[in-house]
Image (cartoon, rainbow, N blue to C red; front, side):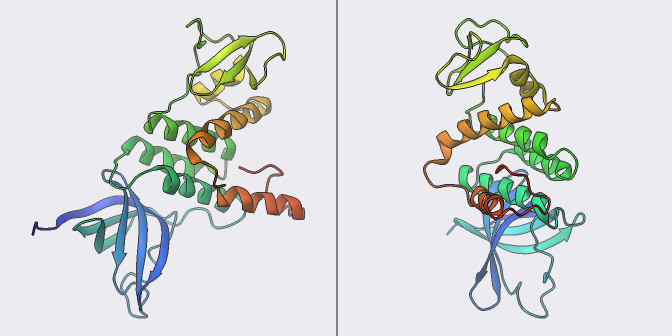
Length: 249
């Protein structure tokens, strides 16, 4: 039998945690150099556990583990900072990021650039929430090999013109159209360029970029809806205004 692989103090985030057996936790974590992993934190729910209360989501951690097979065993941890979003829309948006990672990343597939993008998105949720979400979504698609063509026309190869309008054809790219003509997703060239450059400050560009990213992600998420979007719709239906936007993330 092969010996287990041991990793020491790897930058990590807890994506999800489940009760496991009598006093343990089963963790889904996102790590910088090893991707998404499943770890068992033995005794973490016990009253006298040294890890009790530390394995929280949206808290930067350094994790150590021993891996043999599909699941690893947590052996040590250090907290690297304070917990992130604690309530309201910020928390729901952070949960949305986690759900995307859980749904679209396979285990043991490293994505260091996405790890950085995740940390940056969490840090921006209280300031530039919508642009932060769009940048993370864009990076996620790029890392999965489904990056969007945003700065050049799909049919001609010419640079996208800010003052033109484009029909975005998924899995192909933008094609210039006259006025509002087009049977699919129509966006301004300026919105495409803003998404490409990470400068989504204009409200119209933000709305159009959101529509594009939602359509692009739906190709790979399948028919099962995201739970965070369903929660947002329920809040909107009930008229809850506690920091929530009227449209789902």
